[in-house]
Length: 416
Image (cartoon, rainbow, N blue to C red; front, side, top):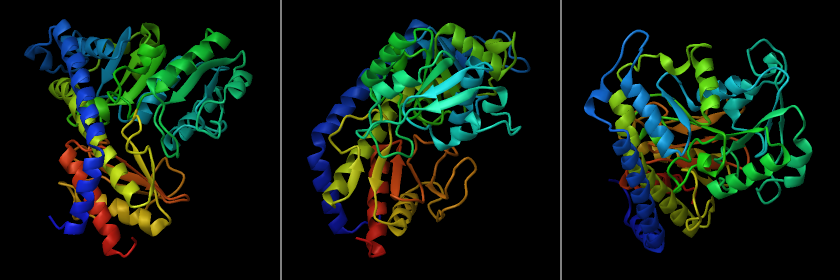
């Protein structure tokens, strides 16, 4: 493809520099793959579990076994895995509405959550049906200057009405490291020591299979994520999951369907095979995406750009942030990622007012699954400090090609 010899040489240098880190990620994927296979074997997954159900979906054994497999993989008491969740935001919102009640307080201790949750939380009783409309208050404790929890401020913010403490694992649109499972465990222990009855909820989006353990194994009461991100393995056509304490999973199920019905119903709409197979593939594909992010960081660091995380850093989400000097650089990078797509490579993304976001956003998303963030994609709010967020790549080769096209696009526009 149209990649200059100069850029190919730069790529070879970056790849050679990061070789040891890339091999570590192969070993991580291998360990997580074995963990998933063990869960399949324990619950005796068979081809009849892939059959669909209709109508109410009563006695859908495939659906029940899928929940059990997810619960084991995530070290949880129970799980709820459904195609009826339309996005990660919907899954998180359903969980929060399920476990919060009027008069409760939701406290995020990792700063303000991702943009799309702002409308779920609400800012007043505006009739939108937000948590605020139902009398749930909200507070957030900002991270300290090092991007870590502010323990004193958290202690002050834990009031008697604090019911749920929220943690966002990934960086979202922030220039900080994502939180490791070990760090999340430290937060859980701190909160439980100060307020034992608080429910610790973790937004696990982009984090699944990036480490050997998950937040539920570090003490989190409930986690949630999207199936068109990591655990869907690039195959799940839609959906989300929650996992954690059985009583909290049940309350989430009551919110998804109705009280008294919960997870006992819900035709799976022909998705069973893809949900099982996607989970099976997820550890390997997450490893491929992580390798692509390491390569991107190594290459752009060699060119003098700031990256977060750096190529040699420990990673606990898919997202690679690269800071540019202006909107033209940012837009050229994202458009270059689009040029490498197998789907819609001819489309030129432009910034637009995307629903749920507070600034114009530009997105490269030439994906087989619309919005599938385990596939190669990149997005950014067009605002200072002009940071592009790249994620995904079902194969390392594709992620690498995307990075090279992005660099080529910058050079063609004389922005380097």
